[in-house]
Image (tube, rainbow, N blue to C red; front, side):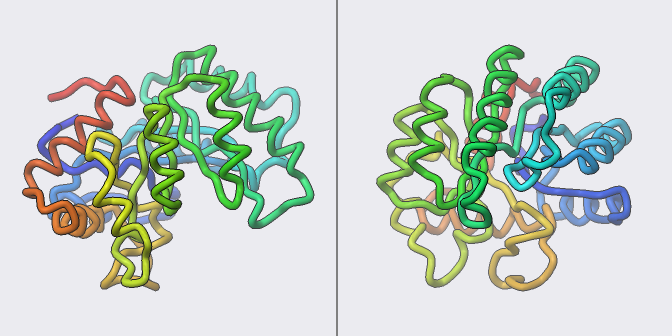
Length: 255
């Protein structure tokens, strides 16, 4: 991974996407490092085919809380075997809890979450966490595992950011940080760059001025420039630090 280029640490692709041109547009905007997220059984299968073709795309795999109905006793073994077979699968995620969409299956979500955290512990892998309307349960469960952790799409309060940072977690900062009405401005001013990584969550959550349009990894450049303005830091400094954060988190070789 090139520490002098931007990294999109969390995005979603399918085999039907125009991947070559997506990567070309990203490179034109200094985004050359990629970690794709595959968080259901279909996207995991497609993700493995994608990373086999593209050398600079890595992969995290896991079952999102929305996929809790796909979970059965064989699922964890299936994920474990895939990870052991492919050294470009570098983390487990996005996994976690989502009480916004479904509050009726909390216990099933927790069981799935805990089983995947246990797998990460067994394989010494970092995790990428989805948490929506579930901060306290997410935080309490995570503290039991002492894993390298990235909080995906962080949009929480300064108080929650500081609690996560105290545990050594990274915060995934994306397009929401550019929105005019976001409360993230003060949070980003107050937290260290050592705890920040960039993500698009594309094709979702496009930054301004593309809000409402299909998102792409190239827009990491906009998210980066926005953070440079907030923290009054140079683009080169922010690029290097945030990408080094990724390299350290996932134990990826520099080049």
